[in-house]
Image (tube, rainbow over all chains, first blue to last red; front, side, top):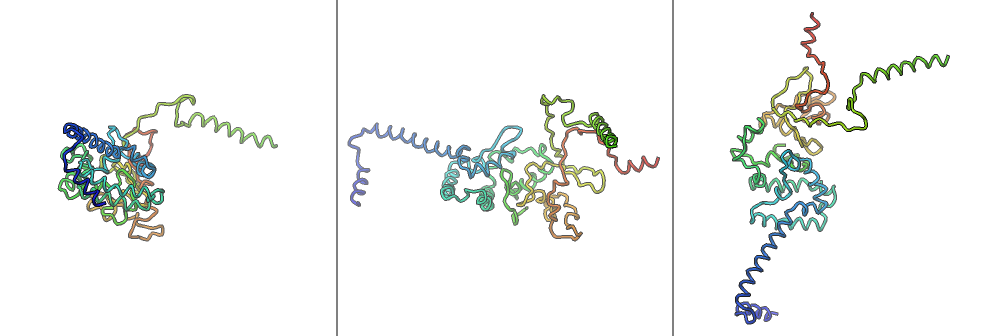
Amino acid sequence: MWNKIKHYWQLLWHPSIHFSLGFLTIGGFIAGIIFWGGFNTAMEFTNTETFCIGCHEMRDNVYNELQNTIHFSNRSGVRAKCSDCHVPHDWTDKIARKMQASKEVWGKLFGTINTREKFLNKRRELAEHEWARLKANDSLECRNCHNFDYMDFTAQSQRAAQQHSTALASGEKTCIDCHKGIAHELPDMSGVEGW
Amino acid sequence: MNKKRLLFPALLLIAIAVFAEESITTLRPNQAITEEAEPPSMANVVNTDIRQERNYPMQPPVIPHKIRNYQVDLNTNKCMSCHSRERTQASQAPMVSVTHFMDRDGNFRAEISPRRYFCLQCHVTQTDSPPMGKNQFKDMYEVIETNKN
């Protein structure tokens, strides 16, 4: 066994006998493009709404609730899909989140939230994960669309302008501190700050 | 005898029917039952944040802002995240009145009474739509003034 591994290891460091340099370099380059592109395409597919609501856990619970909210149905027709809020847009952060999501595959396989009751019982825990994530990255996924620098306070209601120009502007609060439950229903909120 | 007894109620019924036909406006006025009416456009919720005058002292104040997707259920009460006693300093929203802390025996409790929990039972938003019918409500001072003369 050990000899076999040694054999292949040494083979890697020898010049090729059967294949030309051109085949190896150009072929390697093309194969690289295909693999890299394929990898990213596959990963992009896991960011689509069709993929997310392919499972009944998402379709019947969170997706169903999203449909009534302003992030789904509104006057201007701009709308957020699951990954816009739940997956970072930057590549490295995205990979990190995708690795975390392997836990969700586990949950799917073992039916952690495969009934409405199980989902409702687990909702507080799941929500807390998302609140913690958005709190930690200063509501990055909100800010991908809602840029503070371009907010026109005069176009906001008095109440909104008041809060955004003070608490948000000073960095004392971040989006998720006040805007919990804007896209999905809330769990039992007892003990959550501000509720 | 029996016929006479029946006559009066029958006449009354006919009179009511004739009267009702003239006076009752349905939700589909002058609209043939076979045709579909053009629905009026959806009204916008008033979002001025300016407190509205009450028409009488006991009137539940109306909500001067949007409340779309505000969750009020077993899990949480979104209204109370601004209007509860503990939150008013941060939010600068008016606190729910003390009557909301009373149970049905008139005792004051620490928490909002369950019978006052569902805000929208009494407090509602306003829209910018024109009133559907003529409103003949008179402010009590107006009533006093008219009765003086």
